[in-house]
Length: 251
Image (cartoon, rainbow, N blue to C red; front, side, top):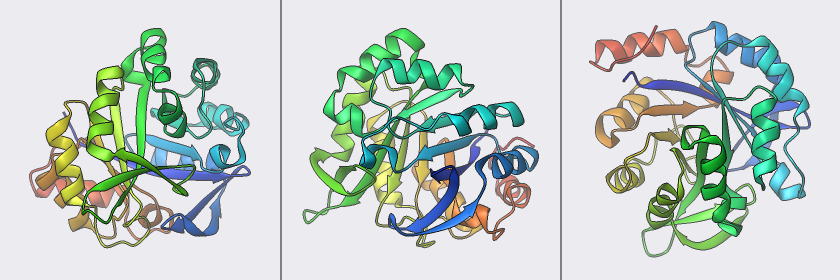
């Protein structure tokens, strides 16, 4: 299957924002306007994260989800503040194709099993915010990367796939917004541990970084934000580059 190119849109108060290592947040654009732009520019899929929902202890802001669904014609995933199967129902019925769950899955792993049973594992995405620890391994973080858990990233990925997660997005907090490249070692560890689609997130800064994640870590999709939002990399140009390097992409 073709590797997916996926812009990530972090949303706060109805606006797309971007930071570095989950701090220094700056305003970018309107999610509908930006989503429509990406839909028309060759993106294969979009991911929207209501990144303050879990921290603020509230549900996903659905108003922008409905607005986006009315304007774009590619699949999109929504996460942030998802804590019950009812949230899955609301988000999917608002027009999203997939639902991403992070913090709530750690508090209640049974949510993954129940949501997969009700809606199918193809629409259930596990999002993992991960940071390297003192032992040289990777710990899972929750609440927008603010709170460390005792969970090992690789073991958590394996457990969630067994529960029913149909896809995993691995976001490196260490590399987030830094543009130094994806954490290839981390991605390879998780790729070797699970057999569901794996999406790389956190660190893309140039064409070669996308290729490295695909070639050396075997990911099924590459997600990025800053380089797309600020026009540093155009999606069609990235696809042409990857195609020339032997990567199957869809135009």
